[in-house]
Image 1 (cartoon, helix red, strand yellow):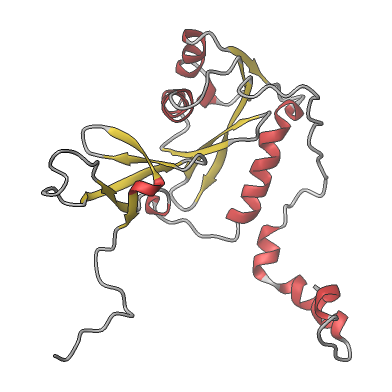
Image 2 (tube, rainbow, N blue to C red):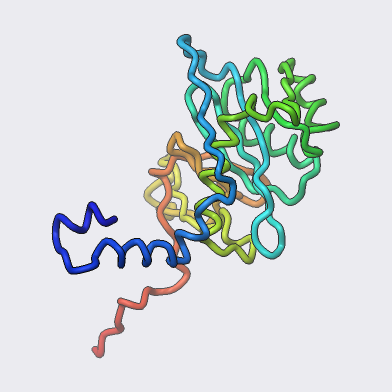
Length: 238
């Protein structure tokens, strides 16, 4: 910060003041990891094999109600998918991995995961049913899943500066879906009723909850839904 600010302004004792300010700043103090050790990411292989290997792990509980999230990342392309989960059960982990990864991406050859309770029973049965090779890491060598562990460290540094009290802080925004053009396009309304957003993907699509089923649509087909008029809008006196 000092190197950046001194190019524009300067005062006597400026460097000492900046060091003291950063040291006592609450957001910087929360974002610092308590472990002093520095971990490096493993070197990427020369041969790039997209969708060959997927690493999966759960993020520690956050907030007063201990909300969790499941992180899935392709170790070659670094495509990341993060979805909230209700608990640390293997049934919930298998459901999220099946719906939000296997149903939308090519089937991986192998999956890396740790020895957590959420990756037992139903999750292992899911991998066997799809013919996916399971690669569990050991407590003596957690570096085998270093890519996703490094990602969790970055997420943890950001989450320590935020406050999550309810599950509404995750996906749940409402959008209006543009209706498809058809024979009755001129008579039909331009947009349908508001739908809740379940997930937002990196390929430009959204997963909408339409009551009886889920639907994946392109982001260009939706517009934000506002339940009430904004504060900047004023009613005319006429």
